[in-house]
Length: 278
Image (cartoon, rainbow, N blue to C red; front, side):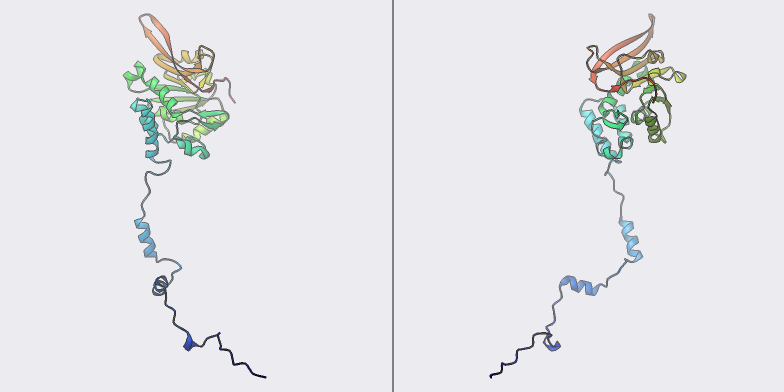
């Protein structure tokens, strides 16, 4: 029987037969620089010193609001005082966080309890109409304002930028409470929980009255509380009975006595005006 030649030994190889591996550039760098579980505190301090606070990013930046203002200006809102107010008040702080990314679009948004925050263009238009009143032009501001329907408080915050005092009435207690929380730090605004159709007689008369809800006609209480020379702007059912239009009422007092002058403007869509409190 013929014996087979011995097979060469493959593994393990002896040390004298091992070829030294050529390290990669990364491996060589790691060999030169020992691993550190934590950077040196001086290195961390240097990184922190180089860090800068980001600006112009996010919903809290003035740039986001200015882009909304520029769009509204292009679309015809021409009162620079109103545009400045719209560029100052952070609308995203008055809507639910899930809707915050839509805050600076020209759209109405739900705020709960069947109510909405109005489109910036509509809010701006109504405030601009009040500012165009002869009395407001003479004063340079809206004077004492009565707002019907506080909602989330956004319009009240805008009105504060352009008036001497704002009295805002809300009939829904949860929204009244929400507005109170949203308007923390806003001065010259008095929030009232009550029936908006009755206005708020204790603080009357008002130089300007604005409503965020529309009914079949303007409540008599609002007219009674509108000061001579004052202006009221509110949505109302159109004369055709279909849809709503903006109604402007001026309280005129002259040699012929005191009277209310009414004019109709563009079509709008607001939540219905209701009486009572909930």
